Length: 223
Image 1 (cartoon, rainbow, N blue to C red):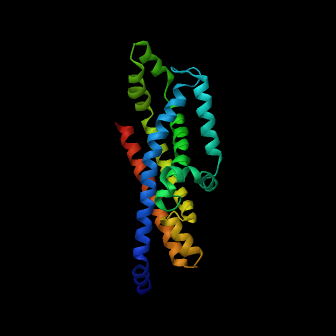
Image 2: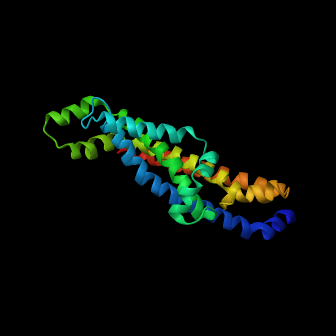
Image 3: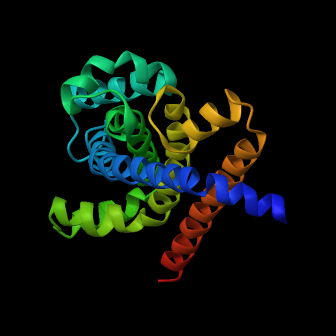
């Protein structure tokens, strides 16, 4: 018991700061990724062949961009877009410096999850509303998004967990957060207790997010 108290006495401030930095990275990056990813996913669904806004050029262009970005591992993408990150936020280190690569990495992933969720909506339902003369924007909002909301919530839960993993990798290049804590103290300084604590916190964080996502989805399913 005394060893545990001693550990928390020595490391509580550092661990607390790392948790806050991780929440900052995940929260800000997720917000911007959703704002970009959901409209992007909706766009590639509506412009694909056979859909209401069919446009071969737009569909193929954005589909290609998404595939290219998703083909690059995050740690490589992080270094590859350093000049772009510097241009946008003025720095490439710390929490601020990792937001841009996190958004670039996560937004296409959310877009693809969004596409998958929307394509699960029964086309017959959409056709029925179209035949009744309902405007397209109302069909998009009240039919497509509403019918796919369960899959969208589960998809965003998966994306959030993946984003947490990306922030941990970003910590290895000075972004801060739990990844930085585990690398600098747990790995480089051989503080095994810090490594164990970091892993435990990440497990709790991921399990909590998954549970919240599952409960929210279950509540939507009942409505």
